[in-house]
Image 1: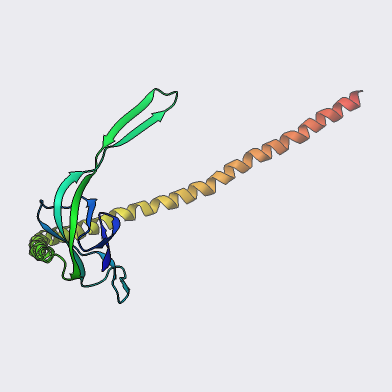
Image 2: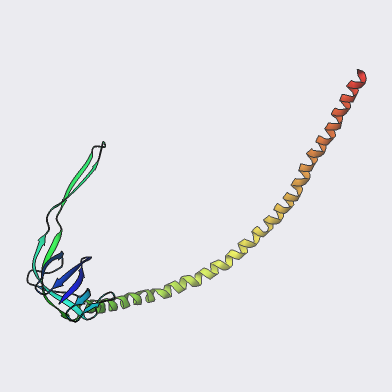
Length: 199
């Protein structure tokens, strides 16, 4: 029997008594770990594929040791720029030995933590409720201020009427220079006719 398990963002094909290295998991050597993200299970009868996981199936494993992988050199260079950076990295790993592939339940400690978080949320909701009366007082004061504001808005209504009057007067002033220009042009023509008469 084999299973495909997902842990640390990677997938591993495991069978009973297999030893594998995975991304670091919490726990000391000798502790047992349950991997509940089982993507596929296969045996003599056939293969069962999950969507995305096979429900009710877990892989139980024992932590053999917490170790680190081999060193990886990270070297960056930009030529002709006097830029070189060298860094080493050793990945934290956990060595597991698969004990059993079978039916089981995931970690039961997680639901207990969620239950503790919910009462805390209720107390936080109660606190804003106490602040609401103060907010209503402030809301009661705001309408009074809003009523005073419309009186101020009535005064600016007169200004647009004054602007309209100014706009109607302005075109009349612009029309006057056009008449003077038209009056000057015939005078220029008369001078030219006088010159032709003198010649």
